[in-house]
Image (tube, rainbow, N blue to C red; front, side, top):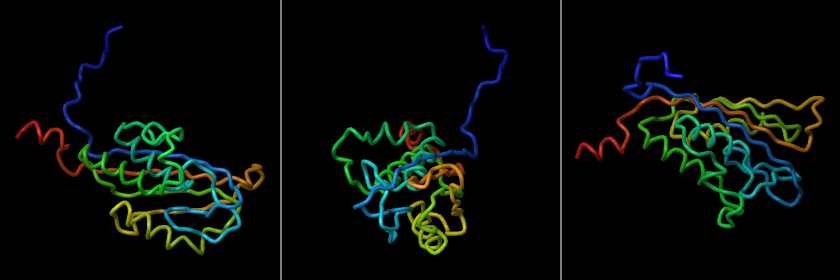
Length: 179
């Protein structure tokens, strides 16, 4: 059936929104990293990389906002080179793709769901590290933490993230063509 919409997109939107989700199970014997910060806790988050649930969700939100492949496609868990990798590497690759698409991060908001440890005492450090990684001011990074009351998720950490991107410049690909 032919399209009834006769408008043809001619320019990229001024803003884009991306959503990311990740979850990992707590496991003994590994450090707990959330938002690029190592937290004192008796268990860490299992995962092929360092298990940083927040940085993984941010990475997927950034990639989704520019319609890029997701974190699992770019950094497959089946590839041994990502075993134990610092999740900041994944985030940096996502930011590179955001810049190449001609966008920059305006702000990010996240909700963490976990029974322990309490995130409040670490919130400022996590927000500062995430802001540094994203290249934004700390007041552009929102972070909330909730407990999974009654959901039987006491051994799991979950992150939900939304990012807003703003058009910054022409994509690199377009600039190369004009040279």
